[in-house]
Image (cartoon, rainbow, N blue to C red; front, side, top):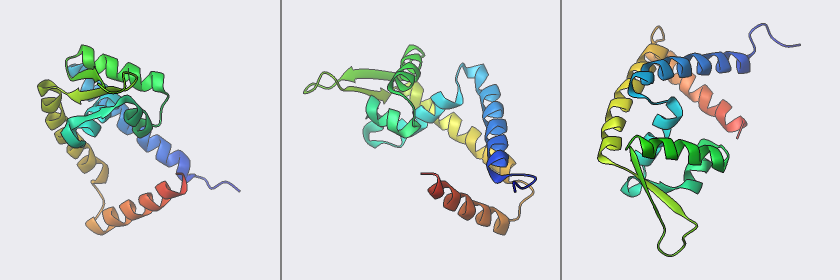
Length: 141
C-alpha cells in the first residue's frame, strides 16, 4: 500500500518549489537554475573549465541540452569556449570574469535558499535530514 505522503512525491514537490523560487529570483539576471548550476560546476573545476562531455555527465542530460545551456551562457558573456588543439572534436568551456562574478552572487543566493529550507529544523534535525538524503541519493544512482 502506498503511504499517504510518499517520500518520492514530497522530494519532487520540494525540488519543484525550490527550482521555481530560484528561477524567479534569477529571472532578473536573465539566468535559469540550470545555467547557474553549470557556472558553479565550472567554478569548482581546475582552471575554471571543463569540456562539454563532462558538463553533460554532471547534469545527467543529453549532449544537445548541455550544448544549448553552454551556448546561451556564452551569448551572455559568462563563458568562453575553445576547441582542443590535439582533438578538434573536444570543445572546452571556461568561465569569464563576468561568469566568476556571477558565481559569487549565486553562492550567496544558494546559501539563503538553504537557510530558508532548513529554517524550523534544529541543527540535529538538519544533520539527520542530510544523512538520510545522502542515503536515499545513493539508492537512486
